[in-house]
Length: 212
Image (cartoon, rainbow, N blue to C red):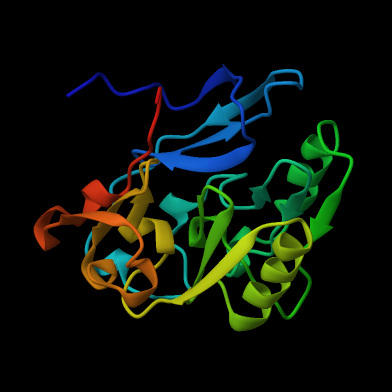
């Protein structure tokens, strides 16, 4: 295994499409290539036990790291979310302030809607929004309306077992998808070539395509 990163490291990223992704439990804020590099913090995330992956609206303290899941970014718009766990509320203002330096347009999810960034997966011009214990129907509709207005397709995916959509699937570009548990054979994912992940290795679905 590669050496573990320090508790907090600052990195610079310059990529072609702005987005928030998660790799091996680490969130990275990536910026559009024609904008200045953004220095952001990456926080290692402790492995979750099977019990803690169940759909619950309570968030253990060890999962609480500022900035994770509080924004959904596309080329022309940044959407500030409203986290489903009350312990996460209040992070949004700092994230909005930081993103305002790079985006002319910020949209916001408002109550009673909730959206967690971990429930939002981008595959090309299509966004998949997981409806879960953290992202409710109202929040999903708000986010969908914003993305559709900006030229994206949206698919809402109800979750039964996973806490977040991206806990169980990861888009690997070129129409490939890692999938575990309830997402293997899911009707709304039939257009992808799916690599199924065994139940005992479901954590491997939490991945990120890089250097493609």
